[in-house]
Image 1 (cartoon, rainbow, N blue to C red):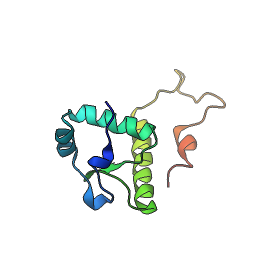
Image 2 (image 1 turned 90 degrees about the vertical axis):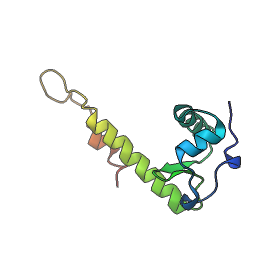
Image 3 (image 1 turned 180 degrees about the vertical axis):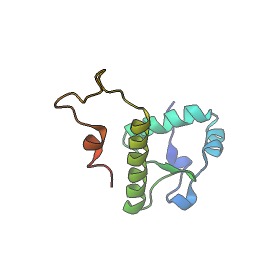
Length: 107
């Protein structure tokens, strides 16, 4: 199923559509909606989301805000995943830490 999100979303965070509302409009579960949005993003469609819902960005500032939130969320998820060090509790020589790897992405 492909969705023409142009029929359901508007530009600007102030026009965001909450997930339950959009899922109901499309006749899908919220889980399926997340997958449809993910697929649309992979195809190159820029869809932003936050606590207010899904929306098309109206300017570069909204895109940058969305990207910043996504990077922060990804880094937070990696930090709490508690990746294990080797049994001797030492870092493997030449291995980057997560902080080193994501330093360029965190503001």
